[in-house]
Image 1 (cartoon, rainbow, N blue to C red):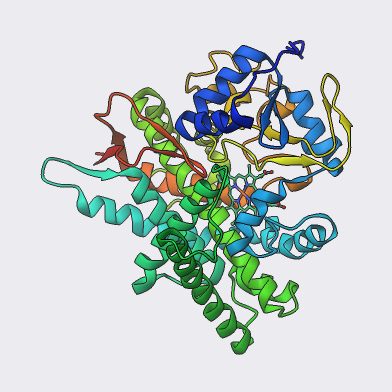
Image 2 (cartoon, protein in one colour):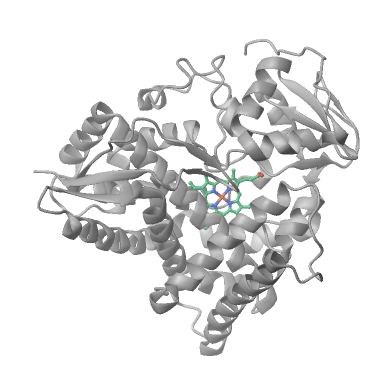
Length: 448
Ligand code: HEM
């Protein structure tokens, strides 16, 4: 591994770090990259009453996420914001309570269950592809705003796989509520002060309403299912109910977390994949060739995925350049931890950024280039230089599910359609997750 870059100089901050929050709100990605360029692999800044470490080196990342994970919790202030609608779900819980939750949710994501979910994804992806084809106009293409399109599609998948339901008439209010919660999460976690909930500002009233919409929606689905006593449905909810012993609060909390955590990340990854393929016709051509060889004109199925290594590499490369979780949840040390070159003190915060480490030219040649080939040979980078799903005990529970969803949808769409774009450059929006700018449109054309 290339030596660490420890400079032991740290940026000074104004007004206890308010200037840092300002930079993060304005241009988070550039700010984080510049921190590493200017100050090296372990950078300490002041954020209000806290010392906050930004760590970029794979060996330090391994310490915090894996080998010394027991010395850290997720930063309580941020978790308290997310708790407002996630309750004490798997995403939020800590210690014994988290272990217990993880044990109960894990069977829903067991490898042998993935083919069941894949069937649902195949059906929806086929409908989606058909709807794109039907919109191709007389000029031979259909133009769509990719971020909107993929967000709606991934929400439909999350609902159908989680609780076997199409959203139907509730689609609009639920997708608005989910987007709104993501915006609230971003706004409140990056603001130095938030106005307490009991003060009825328009933003607080809107938040209350949106949380109610989501809670009522999920409560109804869970209570109907518990009443029906039909635990044999092939969806995630039936497995959750079985393993949560009908504890409806716990089930509702985990369902809402899975819905939000699963939908936004997968939707963003699909959007980025399609944008990158549209921008790189030569790589899209290789994906098309692989699909033609491995699947031809047959219906794409879950079994085909193992014969599509190039597509799989393109997805991994997309997750390297545009990780939906561009920053992991901020951690806080529960005791003094020596991670080698940095002594993290009890109470210090630690921020880890896949977006920065995964673009580090020490680990990735031509780090800013889209090059799926790098994932085809053996991996030539340190293990913790690439971690789009996190790492250690709190690694993403939906990793296999998410990869399957993205791969199957991409395979189905690309079997029939080609992508192009007239946009010269495309902007990233670092909100709660890393999404393409709302206005990026792609052209879908029939493959002849
Ligand atoms: C491409 C898609 C996805 C990406 C990039 C992604 C990324 C991540 C990352 C980076 C973490 C760790 C966060 C941290 O340690 O701070 C995480 C955790 C989590 N993810 Fe995903 N995720 C994806 C899909 C999904 C799906 C489909 C689901 C569920 C249906 C899901 C549910 C969760 C949950 C519940 C956690 C928290 C696990 C715990 O704390 O024990 N994710 N995800």
